[in-house]
Length: 598
Image 1 (tube, helix red, strand yellow):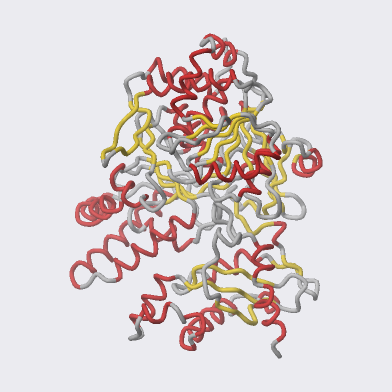
Image 2 (cartoon, rainbow, N blue to C red; image 1 turned 180 degrees about the vertical axis):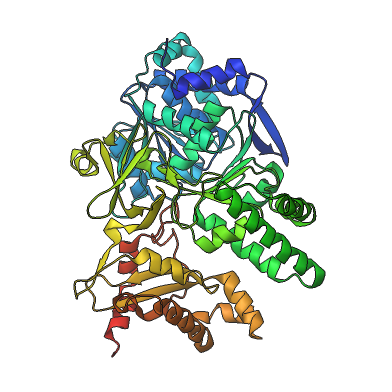
């Protein structure tokens, strides 16, 4: 009997649920479904075409484009051949594309359009392994012998015996390489995380249990498919559970697509939840009179209900009656308006999210469950389960995974989800895997009940010139609780004291300007230099400093004139801060804070 791999589960969906919708895409303004039978049929042809190109065990295929059915079909087809897909973020430069394709030695690369093809074209002379470029549907044809349209490539698969796909799937071994996840490079060039077939098959089952996934449930695919979290839901989870995926038209269209799809499960990185929070909080603050009173009452009821549920307690009848009334008059209307009317599970992951954001959504009857993990353990380490959630933690280790804390505070992880190692990098592998334990790079502790508490990143510890070790994460998160502050980078490594770079939150600035009788539009361009804004920020910094040890306090700060962004290299594609780039790009600004007299 063949191993219960993701490829085997994928083929099974085509026979067990042939008429059920596998995914939806928007065409000419209408959502159109593709059945599992047709999805499997096309993907098998893609696999046959890849086999003709030499793709198989030990070989790789690159994918460069936004979330589309072709992305999933190419990745899954590569798995069917026994090969390994390697996703590339759409924001990557030509040099970054070169690095990943060369490092992976990709034989084939799928690109979204002419713009992404141009990145490959510019470096293909340095890619000796690359022999085929495939365009996604709808892309304008490219007059180049290396390039094929999607339709032509799929059709070329007919020349390869279909039985070869079944033989390849039957030959898959649990320990075999299935996928390369290239890290987004917060501390240097991306590393190729090697995930085995067991890693993704086991984790997909575990993730299904965590979110109580059921066949036919809907998800919206919009976060980068190069990231393990989106792959786990849009590819591996969908195959394992039989989910129906709606592919977002674009990042800009996500709010509209969310309202149209009304997903049962919704995953977002903290920045997504923070944007939701900023918009929703602003609208709720504008309510007045009886409506405002209903909102306040309903939010209080939701917090009471969910705090009891999260402790595993029963909700008393008197509170349940209020909860049902609040749902009728507020929750249901709000959730329908934002696109989460059917949401049974909302999840945040990939980076820490503020407790105030979690509490806000809980008050709207939309508890967001925080998951903690990394590419190296196929996504999840711990999860705040319904009925067993503790805000301020990232939940208990998921079933089958063991967590312990090293003497220096580093979180260590062991389980079937722990990766094989880094592709072509035995030195980095040896540093990350020791005696079967994954050294996460994160600092934390286990509380008395076994919940995991993250306290910072090991590599982000600041060591002042006085020799004091300081973890900036908690200071930054505390500062971000202020409505004006959208992002914070604390500085202090090898420096005499701590300083901070602040980025204003546009929505918060607009609210502050309105409350203080100012012109929000006029203030937006000059706010970083505005004396009144700076005075308000100083009050926020003083408030945070009052709760810190003297050595941890922020002595000076600078408001940056623009947000940190991907285009300047300051954020990864998953919106994590690249501290080394920020330090370098804003070095003069940072030095100026230390040049000032005390």
